[in-house]
Image 1 (cartoon, helix red, strand yellow):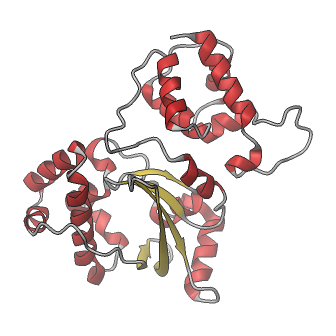
Image 2 (cartoon, helix red, strand yellow):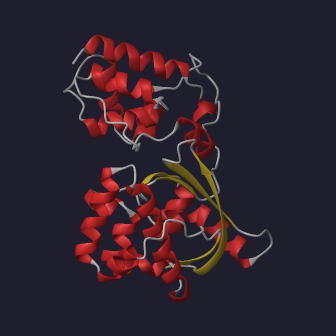
Amino acid sequence: MDRAELADFLRRRRDALRPEDVGLPPGQRRRTSGLRREEVATLSGMSTDYYTRLEQQRGPRPSEQMLAAIARGLRLTLDERDHLFRLAGHTAPSRVSRADHVSPALMRVLDRLHDTPAQVMSNLGETLVQNRPAQALLGDETGHTGPARSAAYRWFTDPVEQQVYPPADRARHARFLVASLRAASGGDPRAAELARLLAAKSAEFAKLWEAHEVSVPFERRKTIVHPGFGEIALDCQLLHTDDFAQVLLVFTATPGTEDAEKLQLLSVVGPELS
């Protein structure tokens, strides 16, 4: 671990970011144009003291999980993320047909969606980051570990997961999840391993997997069943990265409808009612 170089790199990347780059108001009485340490810490989901010690060349070597969080907080490119890992004495994560590191371009869009549910997902159905309205609508999907990080795994192993959709919509969504995993399995060994695991755990998944569908159209008009507000009819728009490894989902409701009112209320009350 090169403490001096790590501290210098963190400071320089923090100074290069403007508040508006990460969806924060410019504010007043800023001594520098960059972000404050406490702002980077909040964006990275860690304490200000922990982050400050890294910039001051103090504290223990950060884990890979903490480095990934800092990379997201500082909106680093993949090259910058890899450099960060090496400075901290870790091997940079593999880039083989996957990316847990959220695309900076998608993050810039997400940062500007304060009152609209939006989240970034991987090609394995892993929710990498959500804004507060998305957590209020769908619950916190970022805290899962292991195979449960994948929406497909949770769908076929946890009956509670399916309650977010009305019964009439579940069969089609199951087909979409399996087809998406089938398409990803051609270039990502993690997808193939996840499929083997699910086939052993779920007869429904095994049957759908045998159908070998790779293209079930995404349903852009969705009905979400919220535990506090009931059914909410929404439009879901997708924005993919160039390599289709990640996608930004944005949920909106038709203005003037009861669904729009529910979505507005969710944005106000936050994840507490999820």
